[in-house]
Length: 307
Image 1 (cartoon, rainbow, N blue to C red):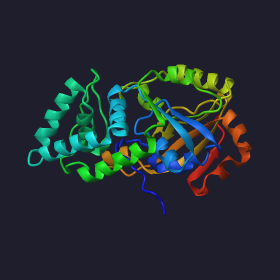
Image 2 (tube, rainbow, N blue to C red):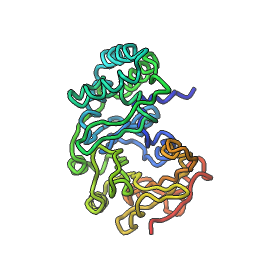
Image 3 (spheres, helix red, strand yellow):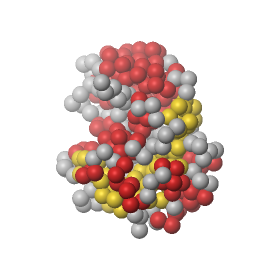
């Protein structure tokens, strides 16, 4: 029987839809899976369910997010109760209550407030203003995930991670500097296409040139990593492909209809680029010619070496 994958944080852009393809490139016997840009931790959750790693390291520069993860994993009963109280308190005044909690969260950064906002905001699409304040509007068509369902997901992720996860909120470069060649790193940073503009979806952005240098250093240190970094829809491309001389190979996956295009009233398919480090390819013992065969559904992938 297939276990339902819990997802208490419904981030837009989460890799839930393509997790099975990413996991197909996991080597055997991973001691530590590291996510320097954890977000909703969709890949770590899927890996934990499938028994792909023994321990996990979740990091994100968004301190409020990592505080929420800490509460969900280590205090699941308390955060579930706090969410239930907020959900019940909104009834009959949902819009006004959301706006009040949003204002209070920007003052206090309470984990339960953040969870409520994530459950209620439009399309789970997180937005911040230039001051770093959460400013997304509520989805007034719904009340957010029901408390019992949220509780079940929170307790499920707590059971998966408690006692075998490290949680931090540091600069990603500090995390990458601590990686061992025995570990596996999965990275899902903000895409180039949004980092170079004024897109408000991300709490913080990264410098593309600096990031490429970090990737090059990882390859030189024989680090296995999988990276989701750029992508496209039928009408728009997000960033340039990473050069092959960095030491990576690229495959492209059909990730289905874009949630962002749905938010804008469109119906566009998203194609995600996945990069595999050369050390990972060697560790897997496969050739670049049969990379695509690692996917269970070959029709969803276009194999392409990064140019």
